[in-house]
Length: 252
Length: 230
Image 1 (cartoon, chains in turn purple, yellow):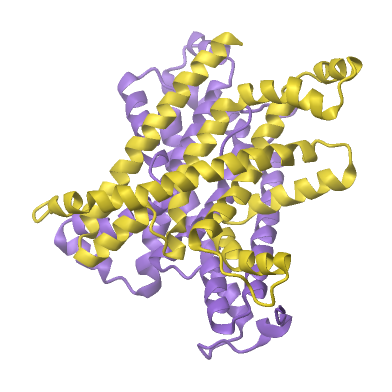
Image 2 (image 1 turned 135 degrees about the vertical axis):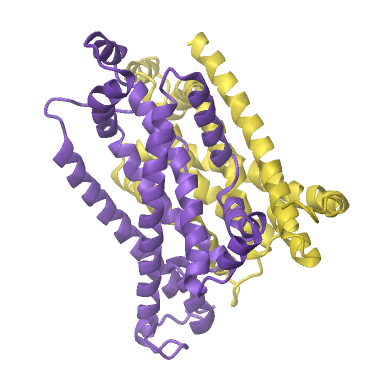
């Protein structure tokens, strides 16, 4: 039993005639990063908003926020991907639905993937944000009230500036999750990194080289994210303040 | 917008969806959980070991698994397992491994990395003094671990382990990329055969939601009960 290793495969021309296999992987990396970044914007904005709402004394907002988080956390990502890609265009008014279906090839699967990953991750970000705010001593919000700040002011000037710093480390791992989860978008036809590696394996038969390359690229991407986020953490750190948002967490 | 919504297709395919699909999903979840917890605990013990190579290997394995997408891991093992199997039994070609066992091995080894991190936190949550006390009583490493540390670690980490299992249950839907008939795969086959994507995918989402929500609700109840006891 012998496997024919051929590490030079990356420099052999790819079947689409445009470049070599390596350029396939690099274009895949571009789509992975592009999808993850766009989805991250949605996830951060929505997640921070929903997470904050869930800590307010407003009952209905808390309940609404809880429902939002439960909805996105309890349906598998792949199923959500199918809902955004196959089901949504059918449920909206016909003219909009047709417009969605007629998006040019990469965008037709790019936008559903971005929205899906964005909303899915926003529920997780909301959990982290809520944990971050709740980890602040209760005295802080009381002090805000005692100083005569309104509820929005207390959040804006007292609670959120601390809470966002506390949740930075868990948010780093959420960002890495969004990069990894973007691979699920290959099921709706987005040619990101994993999909490119799979295509390369199918055309070149060099299974292990293709997957090794993708693995190495994902690891490098992780390292870059960790370094960037450490830099951000240092940049925004409040001197003398050490916070932590809690213990072990389940993940994938 | 729900005009032409065909509930009949769901009813017709119910036996197929649950008898074939859900059975596969649940079996895979149960096997991968059992295997994952066992391997994960061993990995955690290796990671906390004072023997350099052991902890280095376990740390490397866990970090590798946690930094690449599950979809890529599924592809990796799908192609790797036949070669490793052939190498072990000394065959001259890669052996045939069915899709089921391939996915059991994949999910066991992948989830082991995540269970490992949970068990590591669990083991570390036990005061060092208890381990020292075990050694002082003349127990060896395995006795100390098996009789003192691990029972408490498991108890402390039960809610997190169960939450991870709920995530595993949802993640098994990714075997779709190998065209396996799990719950989602079965629904997707019916959906494509009958051209009923909306009904089938919405139904799948509802079923997954009900199961995961009920499970995570029970875990929260359990967590509250355990928290009072401690």
